Length: 341
Length: 284
Image (cartoon, rainbow over all chains, first blue to last red; front, side, top):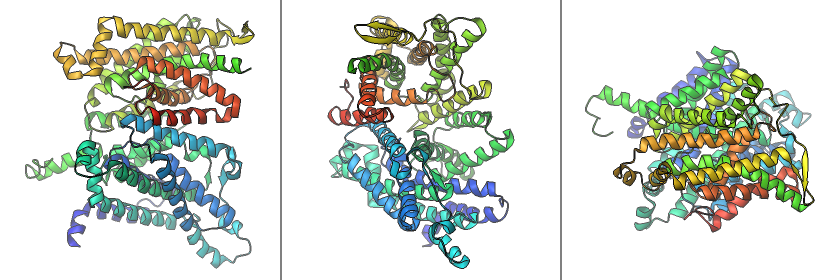
C-alpha cells in the first residue's frame, strides 16, 4: 500500500491541488468551468491513451464514443427519466458495442489507414445524429432543469434528485463528482497499464510481429483496448452533456472534438498515464489565461498565441510536457537517474 | 439527369484530387500528416482574393503568383517547424502541424475577420454551357480542367525530372537515398513547397466561386485525408483516381439519398474499400 502511494505521489499531489484550488484561490465560476472541462477532456484523453498511447493504434475518431455517451444519457434522462448514472453505463455499453462491431475486422489496417477509418466512423456518426429527428436532428437536445423534468416534487426532494441526475445547479458538487470519476478512470488506466493486458498492449505497440510470435493475438487485444476506451470515452461524454446542458451533433461529434483528446494527451505525454491530465491542465489553463489577456476570442488572437506555443513545445521537447518534467527531474537527481532515461 | 449528376461530381472530383495530391506528397514522402494542409489552401484563397481586390488581377491570372507564394509558405513551414519534429517519436509531428493550423487559421480571422469574402467580378462567370444535353458551369469547368492539367504536371515532374526522381527515391528509402548522394533535407523542403504549390493552385482555381472565410477549407481538408488514404499514401495517381471517385460518389450519393447524406456515403465508401484493399485502392 505504502509502495503504491509512493509510486503515485505526483498523482496524490495533483489530486490535492484539484480538491483545494476550487475552494481557495480559484473560487470563480470561470475557474470552476475550466477545471470541469479539464477533468472531462482528461478523462476521455485517458481513454484515448489506452488505444493510441499504450496499444499504438492512432484514433482520430473518439468523438464517436464521446457523442454516443452524451446522446445516450441525455435521451434516457429526457425521454425516459432515467438517471445519468445509469445512462452513462448504458452509453458506455453502446459505445463499446459499436467499437466491437465496427473494429472487429478493422485492425488489419496499419497506421494511418486505421486512423482515417476511425475519422470516417466519427464523421458518419455526426451525419446520422444531425439528421435523426428522434434525437432532435439539427436542433439537438437542450436538457430540461431537473425541477421541470418531474413536476410536483418538493425542494428537498429536488436537492436529492440533483445528485441523482447530475444536475449542475451548484458547480462545486458537480466538479467534485467529475473529479471522483476522473480519479476512478485514472486508477483503472494505471492498473491496466501495469497488468498483464497492459504489457501485451505495449508489446503490440512496439512490434506487432514479435507480439504475435510470443502467442499474443494482437487483434483481440487491440479490440479489447478499443472497447474499454470507448466505454470510458462515453462516460466522459455523459459528463459533458450534463455540464453543457445542450448537445447537438456539431458539438459532440466533429473531428475538432476528436482532436482535443489527441491534443491534450500528446501535449502531456503519449502513452503516459499522467499525460492526459497534465496536457489538459496546461491546455485549458493557458486557454483561460490567453482569453483573459486578449479579452475574448473574437479576434482569434488567443488561438494564434496558443497554436504558436504548441508548435514551440513540440519543436523543443518532442516527448511533450512529461518530457520536460523528466528532464527537470534528471537535472535535480543529477547523474543518479540519468542512466534510466 | 444522372449524367448531369455524374458530370458535376466529376468536375468537383478533379479539384479534390489536386488538393489531395498536395497532401499525399508530404504524407507519402515524409510520413507527416500535415493538419495545416487545409490552412495552406485557405491562405491561397485569401492570397488570390487580395490580389484581385487590391491589384484587380483575376484569381485565374494570378494563379502563378499564388502558387509561388504558397510554395514559399510550404518551404518556410518545413524549415521553421517540420524539420525539427521530423524524427520525433509518435504523434509529435502531428501536434506541431495542428498547432500550425491553429495559427494559420486564426491569423486570417485576426487580419480579415470571419466574414465571407467573394470575388464579385470573376473572369469566367457562373453561366452554363450546354454540351450533349448536359449543363456545365463555365467556372467549374475551368477549375476542373485546370486542376487536371496541374495534377498531370505534378506527375510528370515526379516521374521525369531529376528532383522528382529524388523525391520518389527519398519516399521509398531515406537512408538509401542519402547514400546515393541525395540531400534529403533539401528534398523534404521541396516536397513541402510542392505540396503547398498544389493547394495554392487549387485555391486560385476555386477562389472565383467559393466564399472565402476562416472555416472555408475544413471540409476540403477532411475529404483530402480520406482521398489520400483511399488512393494509398504517397500515391499521386491513386490520389487523382480517388479524388474523382469521391467527387462522383458524393454527387451521386447526394442525388440518390439526399444531399444531407452525401458525405455519409463518402465515408462509408472508404470503410468498405479499405476492407478489401487495406492499403488503399492503389497501394501495394
